[in-house]
Image (cartoon, rainbow, N blue to C red):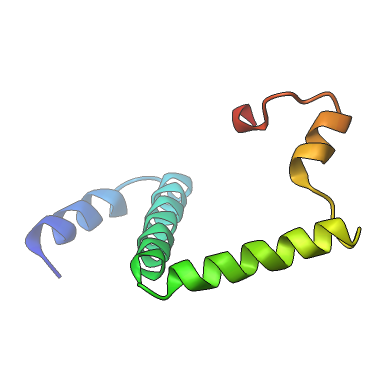
Length: 83
């Protein structure tokens, strides 16, 4: 463990339990995002994403799943990026 991380953990350990849990959750989210970024940076991820996209389009066209944009629009939500 680096000195900087050790210092931060010591600081967090002095916080109330609820704040410690918040910090722990943010650290977990950060680590999860880093892991996703590593996966997406892998050269084969592009192939997998294209396959997943094609499968999703087929499922939408077959009526097996709903298109998210259609669900939002049918519920009066014009800009789902604000959600």
